Image 1: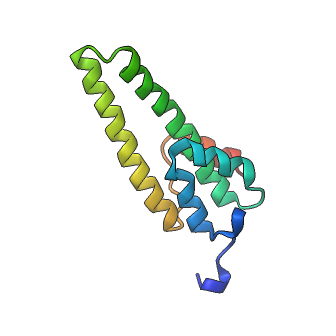
Image 2 (image 1 turned 90 degrees about the vertical axis):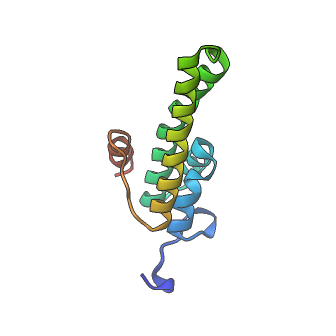
Length: 116
């Protein structure tokens, strides 16, 4: 897509930049962009996918870390959830920046249906 053809999103950002920023501060920026974005369906998709992916994962991480961290298995699970979150964060941000509507299983379908 040529520079002049790039779609704009909230705050005057290019669509791919705004989509990537939806993942920047995990579910927080996703929620902000979902509430602020009015027209751009690609940005709303990435914003919603970010929120419904990372908010539950972060809650699980917090529960494992702050509530049941004292056993070896929960420590392992906490680190595993953290690693999954980190990998998803990197992959989803890159895919969004590339302008791809990359859908995660289940969560991506929910976000896709909600933004159509």
